Image (tube, rainbow, N blue to C red; front, side, top):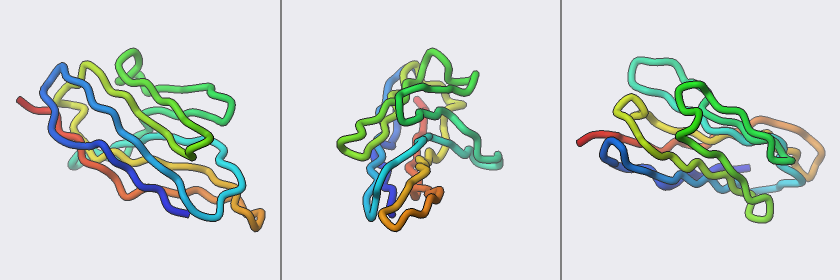
Length: 119
């Protein structure tokens, strides 16, 4: 199973950016999916989570500015980020809890994509 993120880059404060993550491999089903971030010198933190039926949870720091969504047909999860702030600068990672075709259930990480918010 592989997770590949895309959509990172440089964005000005107040701007918007959309991250995408595609899950591929021997997938039977994908349970919860999430976005995390890690800023330099800080621990990785959970940004947003979405479960299979669409329920979402957000970190207080991004509530009202970020929106997580998923497309089950495409095995994909997205993070729409608006009103970006310099403190949102971080490497963003997607994660997925996957049931594989052999029946095992494991947690997987993507490789990360850099988001830099700066003027």
